[in-house]
Length: 462
Image (cartoon, rainbow, N blue to C red; front, side, top):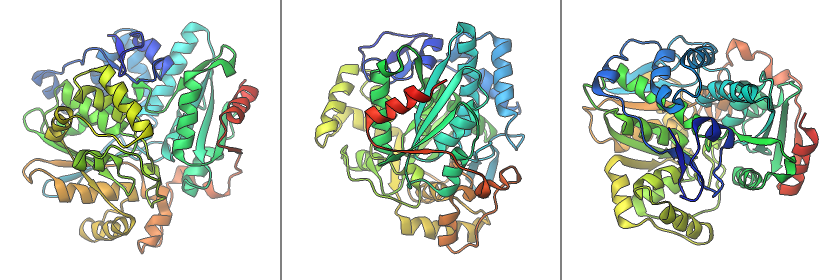
């Protein structure tokens, strides 16, 4: 198994190399050169298996023996032993044919745990094998940072620096990052927005000379291993509801697009999917692109669903690469135009996307309405991100006969402010987070200045 760049100008890499590299040297994102296939019989045989065993079977072709099977099984088993529910991602029935995939039973109560509990272990394994240390830099709009810290805080060979937009994440999200008192964990609050943080992250990967030879590693969803691990829960949920003998559909609250792309990869591997629905908040570049072919930047809006407050969806590039039939030059040209002016997709690629994807955008007033409505109808209390998916699934699902699986991406306690604004008294944190609001915080506020951020990382790495 080799991995190639979406822009076509970077060398193909092995699994180990792509995990340790992150962003391709040409600015693109890595995808597998060939997409492994799961046969009808292989999918059917996963019914009733543990999540860890399904995960091993789905991911093993991507690893391709670069971690021996016994070791990889152990890494997978240990990663998912950290979850508070034996099913890892249990399905919760909302009505006759609408299901909630609960993805918030990990250590930080968000779906990012599912990939990052495994990624930290994989990174530490490869670095130990090489006798190397590495620096992780990550940018977060809220959930990735805490999940990355939790996945890497015990790693012997990693120092982790997480950039978050100052005063633009929820208090729970911030404290989950800033109260971790570990020698290898550093939090940087950027005086800007998520896109400023992500732009500095990409610039740091493009020129790593500020680290003077130390390897820089990505834990954002630009890292292929993140996508690989996320493919699993689509397969597990689909099989639980009757795949491969029937089709299923998914509705995904979406921002940086890595979650949806993982679902698309499950589909390409053989999972029978009728429809993917992309749910966005008011920052709706994905919805505008699919609905109106308006692939353009707009000013960032601060919303009640802050993890989706993103102007540029980085992982959308991976789907564009597939829609343009893996023409890296065409993708690079489109993204170059997008940086400086409103862009539009070519007719044929857009038509390909519309065959499988639908989209819907939800504003803040609707988020509050949905939280109230969903609780009245189902007794489930949704976080604001999941609320966008709930409404989108109702509005644009292709048919009622196909099971619809809406991804519940975070526990409502992480966004108690929105829940209270919707009229509820609040949501208690799980027992393992008792005292979070009283714990000492540790973070550094820096301007959105690349040189100052890089200097801080270089000075504080171990």
